[in-house]
Length: 279
Image (cartoon, rainbow, N blue to C red; front, side):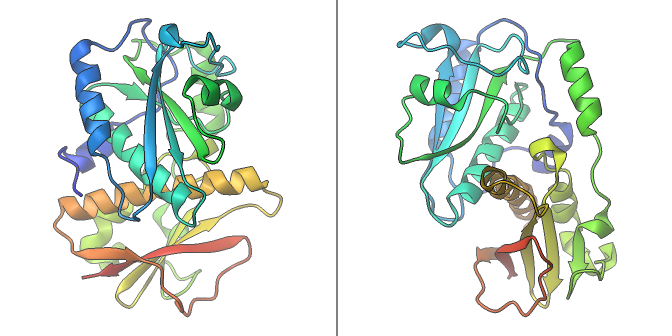
């Protein structure tokens, strides 16, 4: 389902924010946000749920820790999903759609996958133990100036940098770069995918165009932990949100599908996730 916002413009406007004004969401913004949350979907048929909580209304007195990374925020969103093949991808997709909606509303957010106390937020949000709980985000109003901690983090992670096109997008096989000319009408969806945020700005997505499909892959270092592999699936979902929503905005027809035999030699530490069948 196409988001009712200017997708490409919003993707370019979105930035990760870690320093917030110490004020609650306005009644209008909270009501609009709750309505948008209730209407969120994903194209993978997965059960994804978004949770919202305010620091001063946590009924069980649970503290909400973000290891000093987040300053001033009083409202937090969380996302949960089922332990299925596409659960984490769907969580990334659906939560990023909400991030883009929030950005269009003038609200600020930042994906947090590792720098928060998962146990504390699980208890505060009353999350069931059989659910996957990959990420949260503060949501609120950005301060005019970033904190020193935030500025250092952005510099360390090179937050404003993205891998060049030819390192991510390929034609027929890995190593053979896809030209923008051959991407044709999919140049914009791919470029918006390239701009997607990811944990530690790792940008773990690779895309191979072959015949009438775009095949999406996740790549990681050989020593990556199982938890980091899970986070990278969420990152793929974020990227697919950007790709899909931009494709819809540009009137491009197609559908996501898991293809059985893509006939592509896949490099080590790389996993095939899903394909977009054109038309």
